[in-house]
Amino acid sequence: MKRIFTLILLAIILIPEFLTAQSQISGKSAPVSLNIRKKKLPPILEISNILFTDVNSNNCIDGLEKCSISFTISNSGTGPAVNMQLKVENIPMIQGLIFNKQTTLSTISPGAKLDVKVPVEGAIGLISGTASIRISFDEQLGFPPDPIDLKIETREFQRPEVKVVDSQILTDNGTVTLGRQVQLQVLVQNTGQGVAENVEVRFVLPPQNVFPNGDERFPIGTLNPGESKNISFEFLPNKIYSGSTIPIKIQVSEKWGTYSQNKEVTASVGSRTSGSAIVISGNNQVSNVAITEGSLSSEVDKNVPLNSNKNTHRYALIIGNEDYTTYQSGIGTESNVAFAVADARSFARYAENTLGIPKENIVMIENALSSVMRREIEKLWKMIQYENGQAEAFVFYAGHGFPDEANNQSYLVPVDITGTNVTDGISLTRLYADLTRFPSKRVTVFLDACFSGGGRDAGLLAARAVRIKPKTEPVTGNLVVFSASTGEQSALPYRDKKHGMFTYFLLKAIQDSKGNINYRQLYDQVKREVELSAIKINGKDQNPDLIYSNDVNGIWEGWKLIIE
Image 1 (spheres, helix red, strand yellow):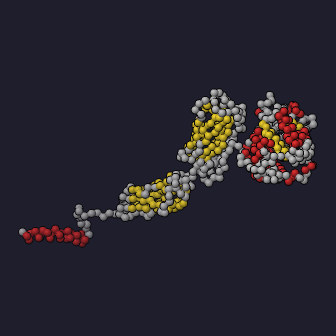
Image 2: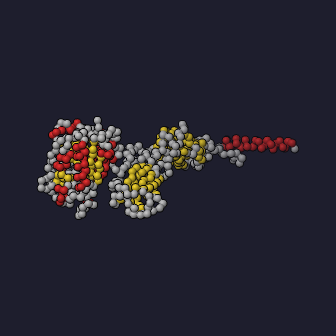
Image 3: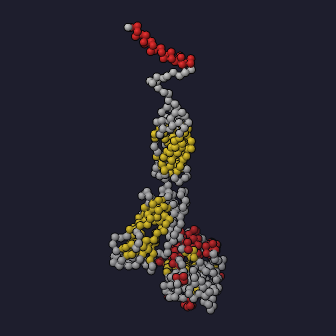
């Protein structure tokens, strides 16, 4: 029995070897036992079509920007790629990058491809630099594709900054009056370097007795760096409103809820209002924008140079005659002188802050009647009289001028004087004589008016179709006159700047020099700028003029505006 068991055991061991030997001799395959494992065939993996994509297409990862790195994995091997792991590393570490460090990929069969997208996002705290991003892989059999190494620039979050940069109150009668509509115009601007999205402006009125006349919310949408939006909000205070001022809160919001500023504007009941509003267009580039803060007024109306020295012997009479229609019947608004009041107000600020004229020595009149103009001119020459030769007088006038058809003499036109009774106006001959009837250090006159029968937009109603060349008025004493135009020309407006062309460049020259400019330099600069700009902007000639007395020949050129 034992011998039989031994023979069976040998047969079990030797028969497979015998069959294998026989198969090698005959070339036939031997049957394989079911308990012998198959060999695993390897994949061959390659990366192609590597692409970095960012939202604004600047090939950078920006703060708060969603980006991606995409590529294709191809398997040209005989076995599948299974249990593949994708790993992302940021070496060296760039602060503010967001990504998944590890992702499991699906199986890639032989001959198949897998498109992969790796999201990468810049956080709000992303710093500017260069990110070295490595994407590597693990594969179950140890046949991963080669890693991907990318260097991508990063840029910190470009913050928007949305705020109200200017505002003004407008009414139909020029005064904030209870029971009458008031318009608040605001200029909202993105002064930051980033794009502002979902911008909205909301106006909040006092809870009682003040009512909105329309929408209180104004969706703006997107504001690029430097871009601005002009908004008009109307409201109506009733007649039982008890306050002396009307506070209006302006709430500004944007997508992130962080990069905007609110503002409060106050309308004073009974106060005069501002002029008309303008729309300022900003720079629409996305980044690195040189941003100038927008304004509803000209740049010469802000940052007026300050001269701390005051001269109590200096005086100024400043007149802006703009509104002729209110005081005369039968004429339309085209007979008004656009921006004349703004001219006068701005010159008054320069007179006080830059020319060093004490505030109590400055008389500024808006829309002056004939009687008022005569009274203030008389008051000025009497001041000169009692200064005993120490006085320095400045006269600024913006408004209509008009010639007398009989003798071509020139007149300043008060708002209650028409073209048919121009001799009831202020004769330039008489004005110059009054200002020099007593000795003085100097008298300077600035006239932003023409005397040919025309005006900034149109002449007065009685102006003739053919303009008149006014006669040059004689001057004596220590007198110099700067005029906006010559002969039959008009004194033109500069609408974008909300001033007369002559006044704007006069103030600009004073602002740029901080008043440290002599009369020759002042005249040459204003003349050059006005002549060129009048053609470029208005398509008409305007040649500023200057006249002076023989008494100051060779002297006036060296006079300076500031106190020395």
